[in-house]
Image 1 (cartoon, one colour):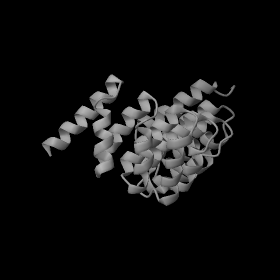
Image 2: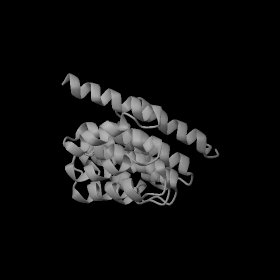
Image 3: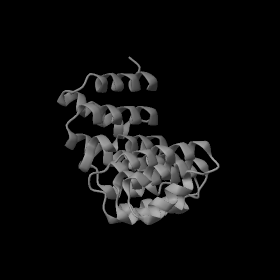
Image 4: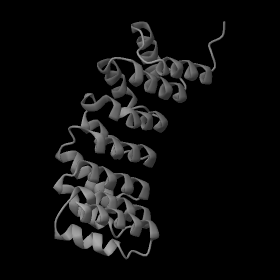
Length: 214
């Protein structure tokens, strides 16, 4: 009997993940698909299913392989699934993905770092650099959002700088200001209230209203 087509294999893997907790045999099968299947769509689907349904230690070992996959689609799925594994995924691995040549991988890694329970100084530094210098605005936006989610004071200067970036990044920077205090934060918020972009102004108005109510 011929092997199932890639989309069939991916669908079967996704179905296992959708059921919740998988058996040991199913976890082994998903791990094999995630690391050795010839089709990256299958590897990505199997990784996601494994993260949803297998013990965290098992999923984390496979995650480490997927994070270095040759295909960006799989690396992106690794970054997207990292928050579900919490501290089982090293922040250093996500920092390496933040430097990935594929901007979609880097964007997902930035988000994951913002959710990481142990994002240390190197992760903060990498996010600051991405927020300030990454050529793709989607990555800059995600990095700014992550800095706001983490709320580490070392990230504030980059968030303030992002308040002068393009509109989508400025809007995200204004939202991130909620995590910080100080005169420079108030000055940036005041400036954002008269920003030429409507969405930036609206974000600033919401934040200002919350601060006034508090």
